[in-house]
Image (cartoon, rainbow, N blue to C red; front, side):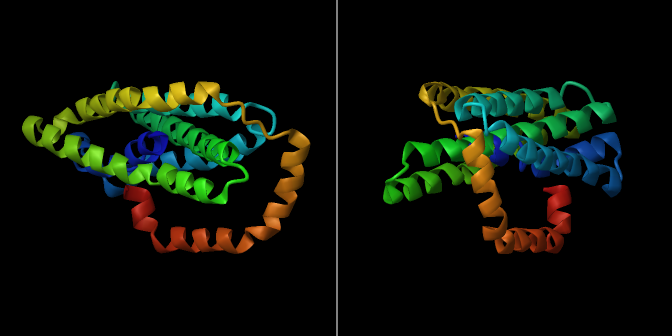
Length: 219
């Protein structure tokens, strides 16, 4: 459910709310694109920082921080229509999502360490949560905005924030019993190996980003 919250709702629900925000606030496409660019900036920064934090901090604590930050920032996005506020909340949402995503992956890997079959199954279920979040967002946002008009976009963010909070109860409490920690020296050693090991994968994702510029900006 954490991936559902942080990515399915925290990031991708923006595509559903964007038309209403653009119409209500009279934004140009350039202005509209910057809000999700801000979310991407937060995600990149959060991913880089989470790597350093997870060297010494328990993954469960980092995970809970990310889930809470995402739910709160999604809710607060609808509190004020000031440009700087919306940008700040989108950055915070991306940051929190990166923390929860990275730490959640570490928890799954640590919990089923030594059992490749269960680890693969658990990872598949974990990452599939993003699709569930999109379904949840699509079942709420269009109906709400169609019934109340484009000016109701703040309510859409507020409702999604509440949904994130409710859905976050289970992963939050489930993570309380986890004690996965990657020692700093081990993380540094593994980090040096992974730099070379994942160069091709990193390049593939970079090309994906270039090929889907409009998607990255507006979805």
